[in-house]
Length: 507
Ligand code: NDP
Image (cartoon, rainbow, N blue to C red; front, side, top):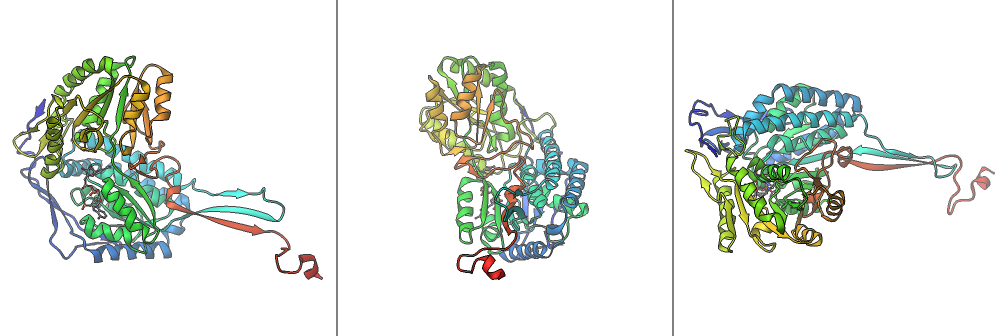
């Protein structure tokens, strides 16, 4: 089902012109700004500063100075927590504006983004709570002469690089935890969707985050991001995006041995057994594959179905997919919005064409959609896919579901684990043993059982294999932005290796 794009919706929209935030000042770059054309309506909706290497260096220097001199890095956890809670309240107060920006810049359905902003508010509040609970360890078990204290210290300056698919949500999975730990930051949003992150900069200033603690530099990855991942004054890089740029990030960071946290791609399977609640699964299959137009690292892009149910499931998933509303992101009933760029739409269409060439059957969709303006892709189901094909192995990042089949549990596990990625997986069965067997054998950072793509601020998120390094969210997420320091304390007179015995010295 399609929702035609309303040509009037953005006709009177005045493009919003954003500046960058460096050292507490809103500044312009010297180059011409980057204009963002709404992927749904084809009009310029925002313009961002095209930051340069020098801008990135100034931002890093501001963050370094703020970290080294305080006050943020020296505040009590309670003070930082109070400011993060204020930020959460201000995000909630401006949620309509933030949702609208992400909807028009990324082409995301407005009702979906509102949910993402609400989820983000919860994450900021969770990080605020953790700010007060960051602590180390003490060892009183090392003998009478020794007391060991392990401190958790903020790691320092953190570069945060985010993609376009969840512009506000993803920065919220990194920044509040880095801030809770007492770090200072340089943030680079995607050049396509920087608006909501820049509004966040205003919010953080209003909440009381001191100058230089959060710097936001817009511009391209090769210009701004490359400096942020290699500069010697940066202590850690937290990156979300493609596996290719993730590897480049690690290579750059290795030159100065920075800590690196990476959230990368996925090719996530949903494994379905004949005894599953198929009614519930069919909905989760459609949701998993088409949520955010499949432009989602967590997309359930592979169905691994028991052979005995495959035909029935494909027909029922196709039936439900037919009813999914694709179209104008600003229509509150839309479920699937626009594809991010015309080039990306072409890339997704090429994957489908390649699969067809290999004899795969298109059970549903398979074509780009003309909705009057913008770029859209029909929810697509490819059946008869085999594990060696590109659509079974590579991250398509579009609304494309590949269907594979299995006969034994061992075979299902083998297919699930046969790709380079290991971000998440789903298993569907009413048998507890089956769910746990799959849950323990599939190499993925999250395994959903009889559900898909649920989440909570308390639950860690991240990937095995080439899906990434480290975890976000969860109670250890603030610790990721710290170093440990050991204080090894001696009590009483010390006896030495070459020194005379303490008793002799005392005479
Ligand atoms: P990228 O990995 O290129 O972009 C992610 C972020 O990294 C952006 O802010 C980008 O900047 C930045 N970046 C790009 N090059 C560099 C660099 N040399 N140094 C530092 N930072 C850099 O993803 P794309 O947007 O190009 O998407 C391509 C594919 O990546 C998608 O088709 C999808 O498969 C995957 N992807 C996965 C995501 C995930 O959530 N795991 C998210 C997005 C994409 P800028 O784009 O502004 O130049």
